[in-house]
Image: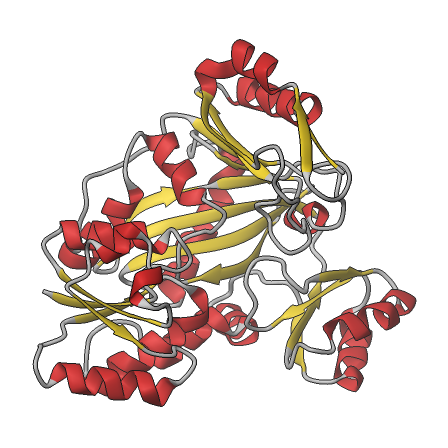
Length: 403
């Protein structure tokens, strides 16, 4: 099987998906805008061929693959990086290959189109509309009411996403979103935020995962002092998750998704109502696939590759609650010292899987620009209460300083 992998080495974790695909026996043909020498080693070592082409230039990509297909039969096209999910669908339609159509791919990229499909299926979404200019944003705010969320139609994560509680705040936010050509204006849902992540093969859900955001991402991006946590939950039979999981399954069916990774976010309100957030036809970012691997003692990169190539994969279940915590240094400039790490590793080290903090002397990252902040800790425990206890310790006792 010859499989085209769009952007096989960027972002970095794409290289591990590329490697897993090759390890199934597939011939992986990379198409990306990185020079071949800049690809991560895992990608370089597992590509049968690489086409260096600007992914933003659709005609150039199609021309490159037209030329390649004169010599090699292409069986599939895969893309796990959100900006080019629609490009992958255009390639499939151009070459007559199976997989997500352009229309389906657009549902996963355009938040308004996505919600219209789910509204028609009877799935609870926030009240919403799209807006392309200031007048439309103001009109949408009047119809929906405050508080509301303004965010890019085709965004990822919570970049350029703002909660707006009043007309005065909307006036302040408008200059900050002026560079976004099309935004979604929607009802603000007050509740806890979770994910529903899947690997699917031939229309069947082969693996399910739920993460809990502590606190919800909008708060994480609003306050520098917060140490954001993403926690994989081991007990998917917990009744508090049942409606969210059922919604996730219904969303997958309504969007006609059949093969690959999905990453959905949903809310649970104080009264128990669950509300859809958004979904991408891709894995979660910020090293959450690593969390799933530690939670299952498995390999979700391989699970995805097997699902793509065979339509099936060995079952995986979460054995642990597993969390990532991103740390933000206090001060500006370069990291000068780290407090609490030795003590925490001495007392909690058996539960710690990864320590990946910026070294002394490294320049602080801009916490507004990257969730990864100034480094991360990954830890796990079979008991949820103990996992939360460990979270509290790392949040309060691990400190990074910069000057």
